[in-house]
Image (cartoon, rainbow, N blue to C red):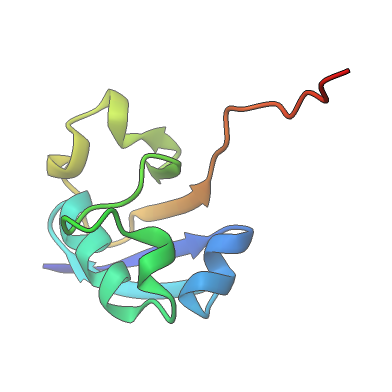
Length: 95
């Protein structure tokens, strides 16, 4: 297990209580679990099943884990994990 640098962007940093962390893990899933364990407001991040909500994106060295091996994406010491909130909706006023 290596020490992995984690950047928490935007509101994620508020929910976690830090913008930068160092966590341990061998996979992105390990890092996500550790992040949930350190979060000041874990209910904002978590989906209730030990994972992250769908609107939370995780990148390992700039690559989205959804397009890699998901939570099984390997991480090594020196890698950087970036976590941020993503929304895909647009508010349209009704007239």
